[in-house]
Image (cartoon, rainbow, N blue to C red; front, side, top):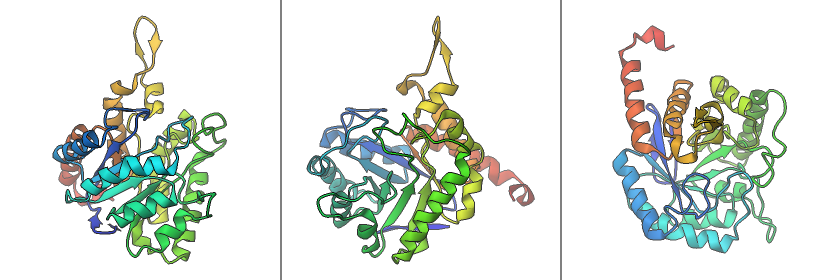
Amino acid sequence: MHWQTSRYLIDLTLPKVMGIVNVTPDSFSDGGLHASHEAAMRHCEQLLKDGASILDIGGESTRPGALALPVEEELARVLPVVRHAVTLGVPVSVDTYKPQVMQAVLDLGADIINDVWALRWRDPSDGLSGQTVVATHPRCGVCLMHMHGEPQTMQLTPMEGDVVPQVLSFLELLAQYLRGLGVNKTRICVDPGIGFGKTVPQNISLLARQNELLCLGYPLLAGWSRKSTLAAITQRSLGAVATLGVQDRMVPSVVAAVLAVQQGASVVRVHDVHETVQALKVLMAVNASKPAATLQ
């Protein structure tokens, strides 16, 4: 399987690690660490040294309860970093839902639009949608993510019922609509949206039954890194029961990434690139040593 992007046809025969670059002061995981342009650029370079195959740059936090950012401020945050990242020799993804930002980063040479809104959000000033921006671009890749509700309220009223068929139906519908606009199937990747309007049991169900989403025929991206579900299921005792802080979630994050790849994910989006790359090398070595019949 391959993923067509603006400048690269990404071979997904082996899983790819997408390194996260948050150019934000308020990210849930590393807010402020790479908020300056210089720090974000250096972080891009370090992630590549650590083994990242793709860089994912974002200028607005989409953590639960996050407030929307004016488009001008998002552009000011991400454009200098994208301008540098596209010179580094790897596919560059931009995490945004705003059509104006999508168009601006694609004009700079970005390869992938990674949208938590799955291109559904429309600019209230002119009605422009991400669907239009992506459909009019000749080759850019796109990742469509499932989100229930919106960042400000999604965890206040999470989904109900069996999450897997709901996510599958949503992603199928949005991908089909995009293909109807002329976007080739090879340009589309899907993401079940771990933590976006879902309960802890629903998130775990999406991992346990992730292979059910593969029937859509698109590469699957999994974003488990440092998510609160991992803290909820890996409590530790500090005199009293306490959940893992964000910076203490590296080990469960790496485990979740490995499990996601075992369940068919083609791309894992992570903060801890070096550790994830090393863990996946072990998994790939074990899989390579198995007789072909056991890998069916």
